[in-house]
Length: 356
Image (cartoon, rainbow, N blue to C red; front, side, top):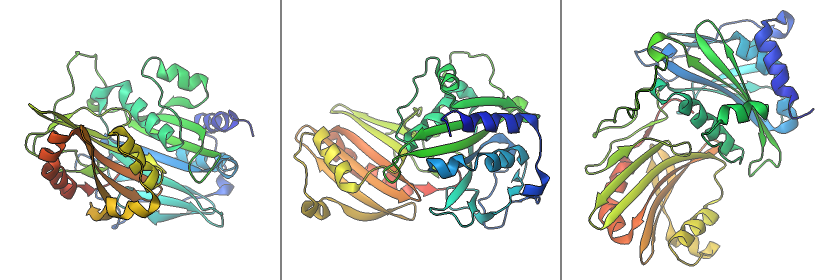
């Protein structure tokens, strides 16, 4: 199968609206009681994501089924409804998912993650680029630059867009690699609202409104948190889900929240950060003394204070499903020491919610 064929097949099937009734078990999958609560503003105000990722050839062989799934999706106020292709089953979502769809009898198991995030129309194209780059990062691909990213993605046969009655559908096909898979493939679809309130207007040149000083993220975001006193929340970037700054006369603490597919093993990550503050690498035998077991958002985490002479780093790593969360604060050592208590309080405030 060529690199470009999956997206071509996806586009033809989704655009044509043709159906293979004999191959689909037709029933609507409504939100179960165990699924995350839909915000009162309604699921239609959210961006919805359907993502199938795994070994390149098995995922490529399921392109027709994935296209059928995407074509069947209806985003209602109560959440998405869709028809499962034959042989697929639905399981309740976890903290970061609305639902998980699994194909029976595959090894390794193939699954479609169904998730949502708040839609931010004020970000314009940047919202789509951020999510595309988030997925590219999960496959070890470099982020696309902001300039002409859409044209570059379409030329590479990684992105196609279709309008529908109530939303825009962006189809994504990526090939890369993960720590476990030397050749991995992703088929994904973004459903973005087309409601009047969600339509991006002409740019006024003004930045998005600042978030509350006391609490961060909104309903449906992948996590919530409390912003410590003295921290300033700054707009996220393609590689960061959240960013903060704490400034003083001694300098600035830069705090980042990111999530990566795979994310690497603990020792290489710790040694990479030690190198950033001019410390020697640790051995496997030294590692246990350099990290502390904590909980973040109810999940096990590793926490490390990496103190250099001039610069220091505070970092917590949380493993969740096939990805890792990184909560990192870096700055002059005096600032890091002064803000360590605030950073640890911030970690204690984290709660993982819906979306992926």
